[in-house]
Image (cartoon, rainbow, N blue to C red):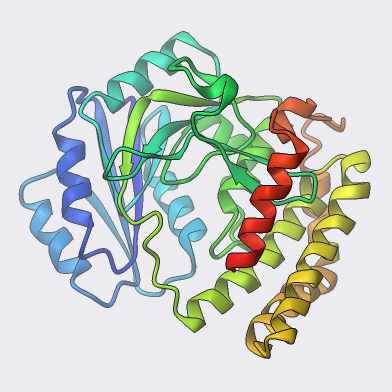
Length: 331
């Protein structure tokens, strides 16, 4: 088996059939599909059982949703392929996508890659991401050097279309299960680089991402995202950044989160401000565990210092400030 496709599905009744159907329409057929029903309470399970009658799907049932990282790691343990292809349930792949993936990994000794994620209307959702000088990831589209169809290096990939060699996945220990939602993809991507492997954007492998900008922004959902986002991004920096980058990324990231929490306090949104406070506090109370994970990143006893272009990309400081300002104003 060459490619193991792993999908963590949670309340996916609107998307999962389209996702599975697109996979089995692929030109490339040397693959297996592993789906983890991650505690869904809609019709996802019944739809998957119906699809099993027509397609050779490996179905794993999680009665409780402990996060996508836990589900993906469980799926990876079942996989028999040389490549692990992680998809979100709200995606559909191009018929030639698997061919492009197989050919790329056959010719290049890379550790991981991200597909080109597009919206249903064909606009670029993501070609990968880097991080800013204050520690927040930023997505890239067809800008400057990325306005080509040739693969290029990126720091991070979205799990909506992430491929990792199974040997590299096992070497870095899979997804960090402390990350329930948000930024688990940035973390594993950074650790792939720290393991002296590499990650590329693969623009010729196309995945349609249907619900990318259609998340239900309920108050409870936003509070959860703010908590997990602040917790995980601070933790990623603590765990993965070399000492020099840590010296400015960590304080600037914390200051940015505090600034955002002050904005919420001014607008009397105490719930959102408290979510950020709790995310920061989590890192204080878990510093011992984080230090252990940091030490585990020294795969051969040496610190890996990432190239500036791999970590931060080529975007100008002005453009980064504009992106950050727009994000802060719309949160």
